[in-house]
Length: 539
Image (cartoon, rainbow, N blue to C red):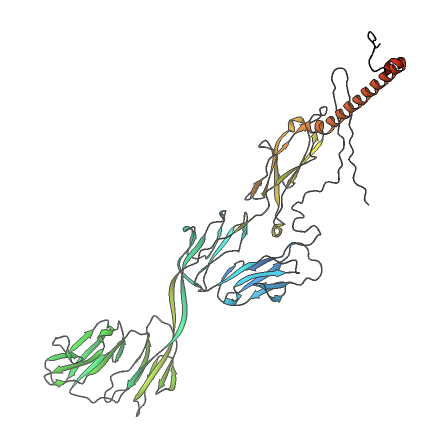
């Protein structure tokens, strides 16, 4: 069995009888066991048996909210040196997914949304980190958390690459930054864990769609004495187009115009002009003169993106079709069909019909590329702040200090395991006044003097002074070399006096016993008498 440590005390006690006493003590050494150094930031991050701390899941890029089809890589980081071969295991929602130090998602889908962990053994499992896969046009991206003193990286992200207008970043619904070009923003004053952030931006979406239209081509009409012609010569036009209708007649006379067999524009003129046609302008038109009436001709006004245009065909004219789209849509390709069968592709959008058979049902398809402007606003988001290091604790060694002793003050704190390489500085104060400025050492050693007594505290900070924490006060009393402190009196003086008093009682009792025994020898018979005779006295 190991022998216990022995407490050694050296005391000098001087007892002065007949008046009072004066005690002077000199405690030279107290050993009740080897004092363990407090855990410092150098060895924080390891357990007492030397094993590493829990792994940490990190994201690359460092966002925990991503958009559908984005890519992301997760890494299982372990603080400290890793000995030997290590097997890394990944879990999503507590279910095993794969092994390896990294886990990459090439194209995020809804199934990738969830809580992720990694581990090196059953005992060393990381805390859960949540990945969100968003579908909105805009998302505000940030790290899952930051440490005290870190800048907060924000990104107003959209799957649509083109932007228009200004990007706005908000904190608690107030604009903190705006830019017309940069979607990322580094915020330096994130101190409020309750702050809510969001962003807003306009995005330009692009895509393509295949549109089609059909028309019927009939046999050419005969050349009547009265005819209606179109200029430009298309029976179908877009809304917003303009067209001129002319009543061609051999013999001059008066003109009347009809639409859908009802009088239209009671104006006696040969030509009628429709400016910026609308859907209501669709119908069957006819002109009537003193020489006769024209056949009805149909005009269709379409508000669609693609129309198949055919002309009014008369004897001797060359029939052709045009697949036309609105000018704001870029064109991919154009194809023509007749009676459901493919005819040909066309670069210019025209199809020239060859005789003798041109009648039938025609169709054209056109691929159009489009853009759309969306005013997107992200969902609100908050970012937790983690402690970079714990609040310092000031410690005194030894706990009782006598004038002339070396007094050591230690400012103990713990760095967060992922930030073990962060350099801290420490300063010490007595009664609120600085006694040692900020240095890299967390110890302050001095030769104790009586005037060094007071309330001591210490402060720890980062090199850039963005994070600073102060300890609570520690009362330090420096004792005189010749006067025992109160604790010493209570511990050592009172037991000594008690022992001395006990010895005095024993000695007094012994002397009384000796004196009584002596009297018994001098007067043996009389002492045996129960009641003394009158006049007898003890000498």
